[in-house]
Length: 160
Image (cartoon, rainbow, N blue to C red; front, side):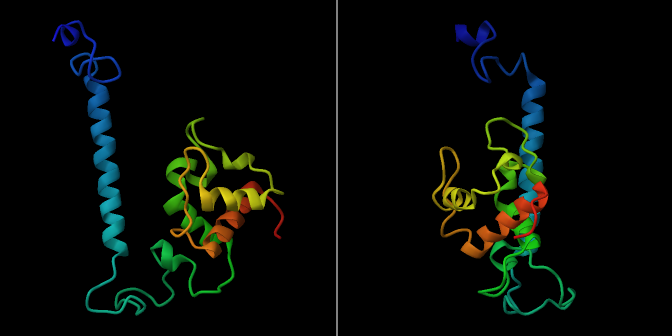
């Protein structure tokens, strides 16, 4: 108890009494992130009365899929930067930032990834590297190719 009484202890060495704004800000961010995730999950959940592949009555037939598995389309479809952007946004952006703009030096800045090292990129995505988790079995190979094309489009690489 003597530790909390002197102002040290709970949050980063400070009690809640000395830094209440950090607790409030953290709680607000957590609630906002949780609410957005719940809305996205509800929007991408298939309806019980219709098959997952059937278009919804209120959605146009050309509406883009909202989940990662449906983003690449049918098996064997050609990878594209547009598909890569959707997959990147749902799987990579939380660490590597929206449009590859990372907010911390703790994560690799994909704007600096060498264009000629596609094999290294694919290996890192499949197997993971340091703090990055392995995505094999979660992100399909054609989606990984699409992410590579998206990174190239953001970085201004010529089309392959």
